Length: 389
Image (cartoon, rainbow, N blue to C red; front, side):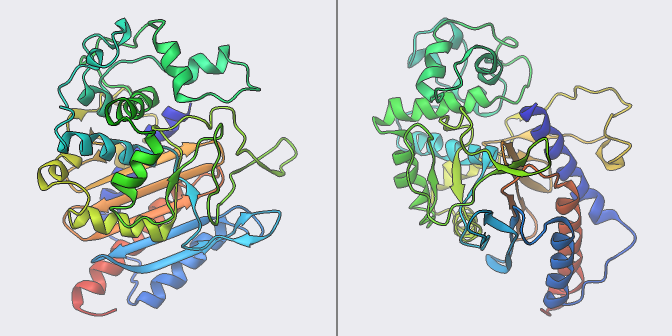
């Protein structure tokens, strides 16, 4: 279910962006202040002042033109979300796992064509390459489905537990390289691979080789089995059967890292995005691989697209996957959905525009994404390009 949510949301966003560019009706945002007022109105219409909320980042030309927090990071203390609030990224975390792998490629310790059998002689890894794990064409079995049905939920699942399960040779979804299926297991294995090759604990390696280089001073991976303090942390919330918000940070699978588990802020994400645009994290050769598509998503729905009624702009387009990013010809982006969190990051290729929205709840946010992009895009077209702010 989490995978389906992610893919649907990614597709919705990618093509809603294209649709927004083609709309005939303009919102006529003519100043940065007016843009901020309209975004405040949008977010405040969806998020109550005493509810879990959102952090919003809009960057243009590597400058934070809008950075805002809405709602609360902690319902008990009533502490608000700000641009420095660290929020759980869910699957947006995958791009950092990909960067860790690419950093090892940079160091000459790995090749994307390496077989995983080179590192673990398990039948389950036969004929699977590193690149196939990264672009979701490995066919490796889904760990969530197994642990949902076979694990003692009083215990925290960690990466090592999933590796032990993989050693039992669970049946693959398909032959490696023959299809496309979004895979959390794949990125968990990549995190294990980083540990095996580097000789360092995964979160420590990411901190030294990715986060610190990108200027992400307060960004960390979080493993519930070995918890660390997260500065200005946003807790994750979902509504219970009585419509009351409840913390869900204690979910038994919150000991997994690699497919998720990064906590970062709007401020840190801006530093990271600027580092990507300036090629400051990896070599130029490795950086060029980040957004280079290496697989094409296979459409699993007929021409009568089940999402067409709500999102008619979804039809007749091709979606690809690079290194932790969904891409089309115009942009790269990724969403995340986990217990008590929804996230989206988007960066255009032709314009120096980045948008990030982080929620600490499971609230629906398609409208926030679509309307935010429409407002920002209109502001850039009508104002920034004319030399005004």
